[in-house]
Every structure is written in C-alpha cells, then in structure tokens.
Amino acid sequence: MSIRIATFNIENLIARFDFTGYRNQLRSDRVLKLFEIKSEADYQRLEAARIVSSTDDTRQLSALAIADTDADILCLQEVDNIEALKAFEYGYLFRMIGSGYRQKYLVEGNDSRGIDVAVLMREETRDGQRIEVRDVTSHAALTYHDLGLYHPGLGPNIRPDDRIFKRDCLELDLRIGGRPLTVYVVHFKSMTNGRDGVDGRTSTMPIREAEAKAVRHIIENRFGRDHASRRNFVICGDMNDYQERVDVIGDRRTGYDYVLRPDLESALDVFSHDGFAENAMARRDALDRWTLYHARGPEEQHLCQLDYIWLSKGLADANPAAVPEVIRNGQPFRTPFPPGQEVERYPRIGWDRPKASDHCPIAMTLHLP
Image 1 (cartoon, rainbow, N blue to C red):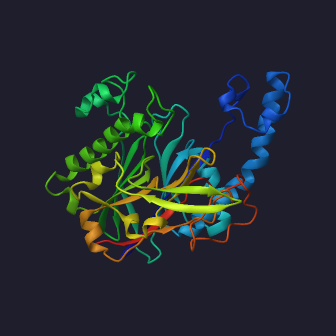
Image 2 (image 1 turned 180 degrees about the vertical axis):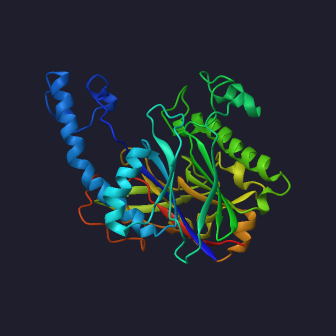
C-alpha cells in the first residue's frame, strides 16, 4: 500500500491587497516604480489592478505544477487563510484535476504577513485506501523557554518568551488504509539581510537551527527518543536552508558553468547528523537536487534545495528505491538549468513572471510498512 506526498511553497496565495508599497519602497512592485503616482488613492487603484491582472496567470501555473505532483497529500507554504485555500482549490485545482482535495487544514501561525502552512488531502489514495485524519495539532505557541532553546546567539532582538516557529509546525496524525503516518509541515525562518558584516544565511541560521531542534523535540517527545526514528513520519516544507548548493558561474551570453559546493554548515544538520531522518532528495544526482534559483546579479547566483521531504529512518529503510520527483516546468525562463535537466515549461511562463513559483514542488510515492 502506497501514499504519494508532495510539498510546495506556492508563494503568496493571498486574498487581500497590500498597499504598504506606497510608503515603503521596499514593498512597492517594480512596475509601479516606473510611473509617477501622485496620491495614495491612485497607488491603491493601480496596485489592485496589477494584482488582479497578474494573479490569474500565476495561479493557473501553480495549479498545473500541483496537478503534475499527482499527490494524495499536498503540503503547502505561504497560504493566507483557509478561505483563500478553498477559493484556489475550487477555482483552479478543480479545473485541473476534478474533485480531489476535499480535506483542507490550516491553522493561523506566527508570520507577520499572515502567510501560513496548510495541507490539502484526498479522501482516498489513488489505490482506494482511506485517508483518515485522527488529529491536527499546531505548535505555533511553543517558545524558546518552553524547550530550553534560548541562547544569546539567536540575535539581539530575540527573547526567551518569543515563539520558536516563525510560521508553525503543523502536525497531522493520519491513518492510510489503517496504517499510521504522521506529517509535520513547516516553513522555517527566511534568509533575510545580514547584519554586522555577516551574510543573511549565516546570521539567521541559529533561528532555523532552533526550529529544527524544536521539530525533532516534538517528534521524540511523541514517540520516545529511542523509538522515534523507526516510526512512520515525514517532515515537509520550505526550510530556507541547504547543506549544499550549485554555484552558477557565467551569463546568458557566454554560457554557464555549474560548480557543486558540498558539505556546507546547515541548520538541517539537526535532522541528518546522526541518522534521525533522511533527506530523500539526496538520492538524486548532486546537480539535480535544487528546488530554487537564487540570483542577485551575475556575481551571486546559485541553485539550491530549500524544499524538503525528510523521511524517518524507518520509512527510508522501507523505501530504499524511492526517489522524489521535482516539478520544474513552472520555473521562469530566467532560471538556468544544468545540462540534461531542461524541461518544457508551461504555456505563458515568462522571463521572470508569470510563473508557478520560484520554488519547485517535490513529490514522492512511499510504501507504508
């Protein structure tokens, strides 16, 4: 008996307008900066028109990428609220795949922008096995003090009573055809701008490390430290960190070289250092594990994995030949692909937008022992 699970940062599935760009240039869309807008009312009118006109293309592409995962369980990041999720599923996914994802779960988390993790599930697997939800638990209220994870290295503005998860760790206790599976959906702290001469990834890593330790604590507390790794669990989501990356050297005119930078320090070492869980994407070729292209001009560009399906040791051992699939057809044309990885992009994909997301969905079929 098998289950197919996927994770996807759908990026800003938002059911509201953000007009703060009129006063905060960092939040103003680049196309509006080309025009002289004389009043906040004019800005709001133009921004609303821009969002409405671009969103339909974006969400059709997002739905195409999700349809290509063919998942029974779909873990999402950056969803505004349950109403936005319902509207997207009915208005877009239904047109792609029919009445599939009837079960929907989202708990409001801690993100200041209101973007949350969510789960869509079928009522049955493709093999006709019932997907039963026993319990759904949010861990958004956990603090550093609660788990003894506070230390000054977290940053100057972090306090012991602050919440650990920048969004949430959503736990779903499932039975698939009567067999247990626990799914943990996360979206870790982003790699924001650096401070004190330290780059953003390094300066924010202690926060992601605390989030990873908190996830591991939750799992070990539930199943027992000595038994947890043998239980059926997966940890899915955008973890905003990587243990390796592929540096992209060159430009469109001269061509690109791809240089692997392995064995980088990472917050995700919390999961892997002692075999507690396995990054299933490590079963793919080293140049073919990326889920996002990062670029800040030709001097700073790389491919990296930010999106994960971590398998418990028990699930990994029960699925030795299972390899995740990466859906890259929704990537914008600006994303360079290493040789042999090129795909046919979806219709209407642009140079930078529209696109399904900057992130690629990953999907995996698992046998449940």
